[in-house]
Length: 104
Picture 1 (tube, rainbow, N blue to C red):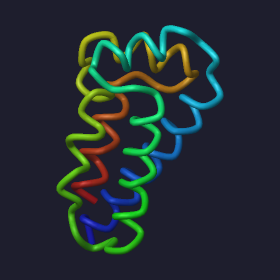
Picture 2 (picture 1 turned 180 degrees about the horizontal axis):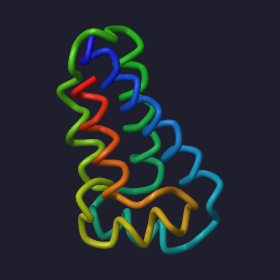
Picture 3 (picture 1 turned 120 degrees about the vertical axis):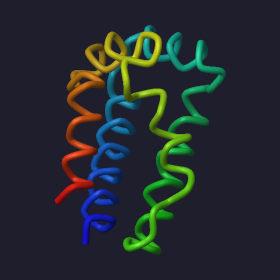
């Protein structure tokens, strides 16, 4: 059951990040993604692909989830500033929620 719950949290994160990137209009978001060698379009595509992978197999841990989400977790570089620009909670709160979902 915990894999399904954790995957639900991953999808929630991906949806909120996608919406935040699309709606923020803040140039720092693009600068942050550029610093991570990822364009805005590529990051949105990665987040959408992650959502699709989880939807197809909700009971299987997606291998790509860490690659897609690591830039938003653990205070990676300027993640907290970027998340704040998008009106989202900080990376520590995201990581805490992810690990709590894994223990549920």
